Amino acid sequence: QPGPHVLDLCSSWVSHYPPEWRGGRVAGLGMNAEELAQNPHLTEHTVQDLNAEPTLPYADGSFDVVTNCASVDYLIKPREVFEEVRRVL
Image (cartoon, rainbow, N blue to C red):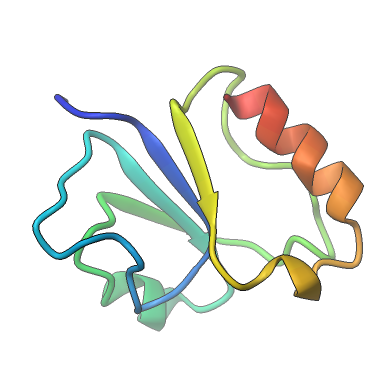
């Protein structure tokens, strides 16, 4: 798919991307399947509690960009999560 491959970490129904923006693969990882399904920018979504399991379910180098808006302060293992972010970039 054209456009950047983006992982939206701690995603939800609200997208923080501009309404007109379109990426290639846009994966959302969050805590609520119903909310993730309502996010208009996501091309796929995964439900996962990063506090229980900080390992991201994606292959090395899967994404061009990883975003996280206003949720990093809820992570109890931020170092592990950001090591995973580095791995999937």
